[in-house]
Image (spheres, rainbow, N blue to C red):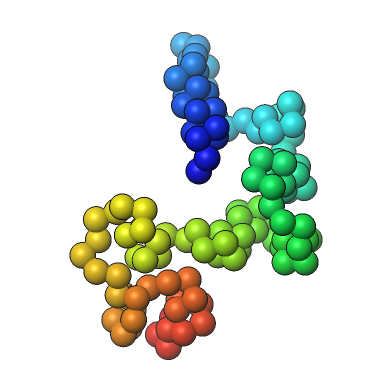
Length: 119
C-alpha cells in the first residue's frame, strides 16, 4: 500500500465523526454518490492503482458474478491472497510456510489452485 493511500485512510479514520443515535454502515463514495457498481469500482481501481489495461482484467470485470467474487479472483491473479508464504512475507508470525492440506511444499497461490493434489 502506497504512503499516499495510507495517509488518506488514516485521515478518514482519524477525522471520522460519529453522531449519537445514527446507525453505522458502509457507504460507497468512490464517485461522489452512494451508488455502487462493479464498473465504478473498477474505474476507481484503474485510476488509483494504475491497473494494466489487459485482457485478463477486462474479462474479469465482464464476468456475470458478484463483486466479491471478482475481488477474490482479482486478488488471486495479483497474488494477494493470505497464503502462508504471503503472510510470512508481510511479517505475520507463522510457524512454517508448508501447505496445511498436503504438507509437501510451501503454500502459495499457484500451489493451492494448481499444484496441491488435496485442494
